[in-house]
Image 1 (cartoon, rainbow, N blue to C red):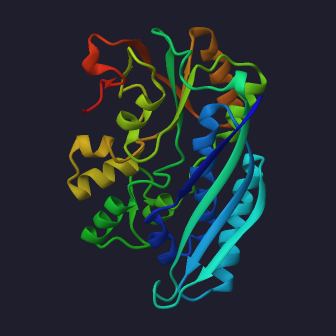
Image 2: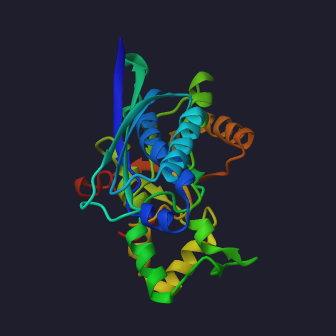
Image 3: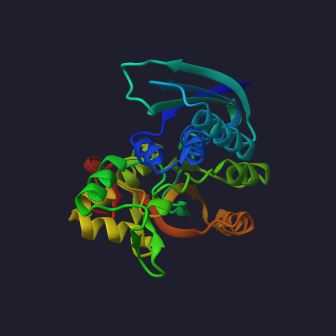
Length: 296
């Protein structure tokens, strides 16, 4: 029996940074990724995508570039862009500003639904690399940028990477990787898209009663952009973990025999992956669904 799974999301305040620095194409990809990466956690395959754009005064060039990004995101996700709605709302949005929302529908056979019920103590947690900050935490990012007076010339980290360019890197799409793994009948017991709230708040969503995650934060290298934000924004460690993905954009929970399969698929896709922890039984009812090893 086929089940339909839907997801709705937006890009958030990353839009302001994108509109200030002509990042219209990338936020189109972001919009698709934020929806698709959610629905695939159930094992569903994306079917189609619809978008909504609202603006104070329509800029045909900017809107066309956004749609090009949305179309690319759909192509990379293997779903159809059916169309959408554009609303021109002068007086509500400032001139030159726009907002975006997206809606994705996916399908999965009922007997192939991944809902976490198969997760067992001893399962491995594989963290799949993010492409950057993705589309969460930009209210905090923008506050730090304002505090330090950052602009298009600002650089960070080893090699003096352009900061704004890095921040506008589009969200990694994980649909192709997940489809490859499912087509190969990889034993995936659970999946989580790491968005706002980071690992501490997103990983527990797929855990059944009586289990918790134990994550080793030293098992992967935190991207340098987070160190820059923390040092220049005086961000407490706990807030950093509960706001950003910190380099892990998606998690797969698999039994031991599934680990090399996932690692091989990630290498083929050109995406880094790390074994970042294990699933274990809760010691008492208070820590059901918790994530040990990270700031609470």
